[in-house]
Image (cartoon, rainbow, N blue to C red; front, side, top):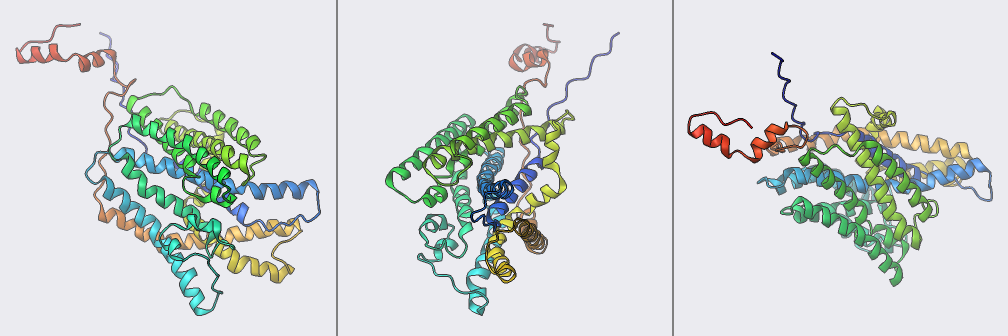
Length: 430
């Protein structure tokens, strides 16, 4: 008698952690550091080497766009997994508050109150009240600050916090199909709103920092989460990681062309280039997600995906929040004064000095972020586990490709089997 093969295994639930996204987050924060730690001054020099390095420093601004896409994906992924649970809002807001608020408000207390009060730093003039910073609304005023304000990089934290406040409310009762259409609609609306700002003559920084101006990056990541959640529910395996990798690279080239080499400001780069960049990063994030899922099943993955799992890159991703919070104050209060003392200027024409400065500033910032994580941040995160109950693991019934055809028929047509059980006899074979 031939042995009956074992029943196919049910696909595991969604991965609790996606290591490749730590690597992507590490890339994002390193790009930001490249842009903001750029002290290279070409002057009249047009040598190829310095020009290429200067351009590489400049395009680091796209790291913020990658941050937004990752946030949109991860936040929406978590919300979709907890939809319908009684502690849906409590769990989300508790986690966000413990992760974001302590370090944010500590930074405001140190750099806006304590250091100016002790005379260690000068009180920087502000056209608008610092209450905009305390209320996570600085992205609406920073574009109109003559000097950018004391913490100009906090605009992106304000954008994300506003997204965290509104997004759970919108997704609370929405079916997955409606979540998908909401994401697509908002992604398409964002460049139209930027076009309206251009037409109305708003400054470039407003197009760069207003919440709805960067909404397409957040909702592109959210759309990826909705798509991936639907795939999990259906047990779909048609798409491969390589498809999204190729799509992401093609869109990245299109974004470079549309934005004239990733220019940060300008009508066409900001109206069309931002959206293409968001779609590109969403596709590359999808590639990373599918790679982690394939690896968890024991499937072979691309060698390129191993880059995202480099320990150093993942450590930058792990400490990226503190790196982002502290890098600009360290630049303004420590880095530039030291550079002025050594060279006489806040910028340098020496390529070696510029690269050395970037390496040193990055190392110091990473060290401060490491201390912040181990001495401060992780203690608040530990409170989350004590204050909330463990989440209920989502169940996916009837995953396509995980049951036999006979089992599907039994699921769709159970009446004969139930009737036979009630009559005390076996169901007729099909």
